[in-house]
Image (cartoon, one colour):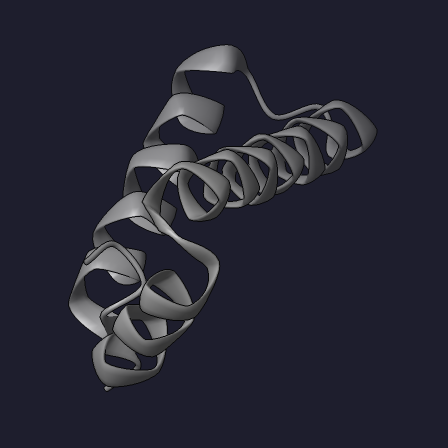
Length: 65
């Protein structure tokens, strides 16, 4: 779904800059999930499951090209 847009942005930015930005976005998303889990008392095992689910959804939507 988003793969063509992700590839276009990567081609415009260049792979090294794109990978850096992508890494920062992934870290921010993981931090958001962690903060959510801490706020609602969700244990670390379930938090890891949520992060894995986010990664799988990103792959399915084409963000992880």
